[in-house]
Length: 67
Image 1 (cartoon, one colour):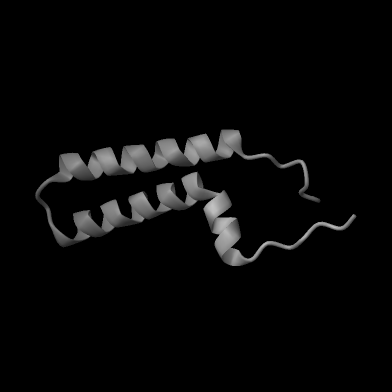
Image 2: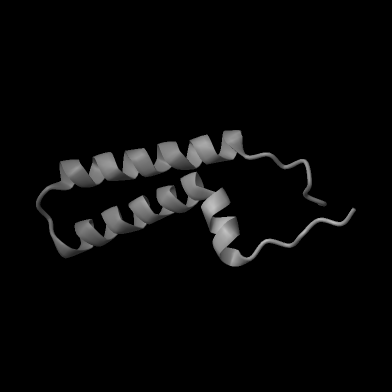
C-alpha cells in the first residue's frame, strides 16, 4: 500500500508546534525591531517560541523519513 502525499497545508497543520514557534519568534523580533519598549514581553515570546520548537523537535516522529 502506497502512502498518500500530503499537501503543504496538511503538513503545516501536522507540524503546528514548529510553525507556531517560528511564527512567535518572528513576531517577537518584528515587535523588537519596531519598538524599543516592552522588551520583557518580547523576551517571553521568544522564550515560548524556543520552547515550542524544542517540543516539536522531541515529539516529532521521523520513522518514515529516508536520509
